[in-house]
Image (cartoon, rainbow, N blue to C red; front, side):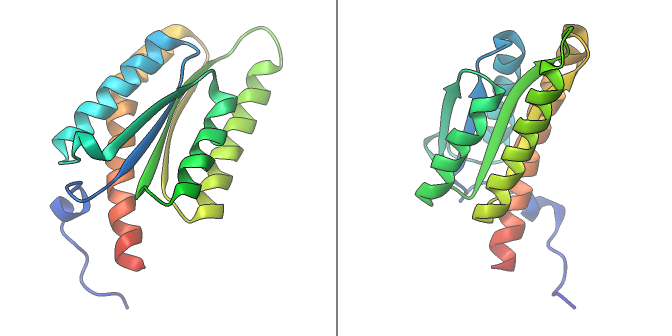
Length: 154
């Protein structure tokens, strides 16, 4: 059995963490809102702004490549993927949603690095806008909690 579970406050203490964020530019109004909420929450959790690297890529399919480059650098305790895929009239939605999700997961598992996946997949812009703030906040919390957990388990 593992030792006593760390308190909730300890799990969300980002003071010593280095976080990388990869943001897709496609559907920028939503991804910008995701990033704003995420950065605000990281700050509230104690992550020093100098310990955050925030890069932008064209779209959701490019997110994993940037995450992989960050993972290979060994400079981060956790990464965050931000994007927005909205269903259109073609099969493209399924392709982008499935491939981007699988690629983000593969990077996390290959590098044993927590990645908070906040690439929204919605039916329409209204659904994306309804989720953009909360999912940005959630991504920050997940990244910090999982970084602390994996550091504890190491």
